[in-house]
Amino acid sequence: MARKKLDLVLENVVIENVAAEGKAIAHDVDGTVLFVEFAVPGDVVNVRVTKKKKNYMEGYITEIVKPSEHRLEPFCGHFGVCGGCKWQPLPYEMQLKAKTQQVYDQLVRIGHLDVPEISPILPSDNTTFYRNKLEYSFSSKRWLYRDEDPDQVAPDDRMGLGFHVGKFFDKVLDIKQCYLQKEPSNSIRLFIKDYAVRNGLEFFDIRENHGYLRNMFIRTTEDGQVMLIICLFYEDKEVREALLDAILEAFPQITSLYYVINTKVNDSISDQDCILYKGNEAIVETMEGLSFKIGPKSFYQTNSPQAYKLYSTTRDFAALTGNEVVYDLYTGTGTIAQFVSKKASKVIGIEYVPEAIEDAKVNARNNNISNCTFFAGDMKDVLNSDFIAKHGRPDVIILDPPRAGIHPDVAKVILDAAPERMVYVSCNPASQARDLAILCDKYEITKVQPVDMFPHTQHVENVCALRLKNSAE
Image (cartoon, rainbow, N blue to C red; front, side, top):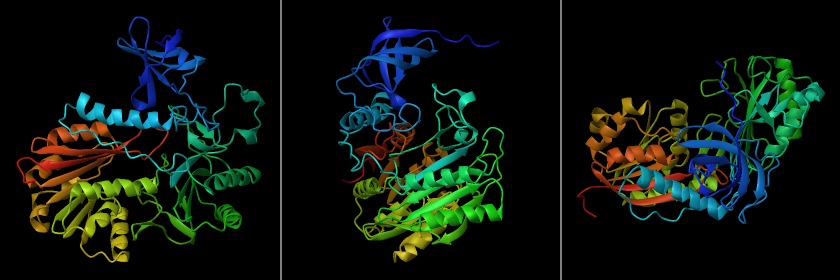
C-alpha cells in the first residue's frame, strides 16, 4: 500500500538553535520538535513537513518570513541543492560554537563521560578552497531544477559532472563553480565536461550501469602539485588517449595523471588498478620538514593546514619524552607516526590498507626515519597479546580510527596492554564517546580539543587525551 503523502505546512516557525547533522531545531505550537535544513537561529520561516513521527518532525523551508539577524547570503550558487556546505548562511563563529556543543553533547550530555573543560575549538585558517581532494561523478541524467522542463532540455544539456544530490544515489548536480578546492580544480572539471560533450563521449548512467565516463578525482598540494584520476567504465584506447592528451595540453601543470578502468557496479577505486599515464607516480605534501607521498589511493587529511594543527595537538597530548614505545593505530600512510617519531623511542603503525602501509614505509625512508615500523592488516586480527609481546608493550597509544570507531576486541587488547597514556583522534564524536566509555574503565580523560577541519559543514574532529588511572602525573 502506498504511503499517504504529507500535506502539512507550518507557518511562522521560529528557529531556535543549531541541531545535529547540520540541521536546525524548532518546536511546533504543541511542543513537537521540528528539524529544518538550511535554517539559521532567529529565522522565522514557513516549513513543509516531510516526515512526521510521534516525537519529532522534519521539513524544509518554503519561505523565509523574516530572516535572522545572523543569516548570511550563501556564497555558492549551488547552495540548497548540493549536499555540501549546508552552513553557509551561518556565521563562522556560530559554526564553531555549534561544533563545540556537538562534542560536549556526545561526550557529556549523551555519553555521561567525566571530562575536563573543553578547550576552544581550533578554527580553520581557510573557510573556502580548503580541501586538497575532491571526487566528481559523471551522469547522463543530471539533476534538473524545479523550473526546468525535462522536455525542453537539450540532450547535451542533460549531461552532468559534479556531486551526488543528497538522498539520491543516481542524481548528480552539474557543478559550475565549487568553493572547496583551489584552482585549477574548477577549470579542469569544466574543461573535461566540455571536451566530453563536444566529442560525444558517453556519460555514465548510474542507475542502468552503462556509459564511458564514470568519475574523477582531483588532488592538490599546498605548493601547487596536481593529481588527476579519470575513471572509465571500459577501455577504448584511442578515445582514452585523445581525452588524456587533451587534458595535458590544456593543463600542463598537472603533476600526475592516472586512469582507471572500473567495470564494477560501484565507483570505488580502492580495489582497482590505477594506471599512470603521464607524470609522477605521486604528489608530495610537506609538514614540519617531513614529506608525505600521496598516491591515487592514499589517505591524507583533506585540509592540509588544519591537519598540521590536528597532528600538533596529538603530539602535545601524547607528552612524549623520547623514551616511549608508541603504537599508532589506524596509521594510514603513517603521517601521525612519523610526526611524533622524533620524540619517541619506537613507533609501531598498524593499518588495514596494504597500499597505505607501503606509502608509509616509503615516506619514512624518504624522511630518514628509522624508528617507525609499519604493519598491514585488520586491527582486531593484528593487534593481540602475541603482537605486543613481540614488539613491546606500548607506553602511549594513538588512535585515529574511521568513523565507526574501534572494534570491541581492539578496546579489550588496549585495556590489557594498559599504556600510561592514550590520545584518541576522531572524526565522529558519537563513536568516540562510545569507545571512551569502554576505555574509561581504566582511564581518565584529561584534555579535550575540537578541531575544525571542514568549515560550513557540521563535521568536527576531536582529540582526547587519556591517562591511566592511579598513574603518576
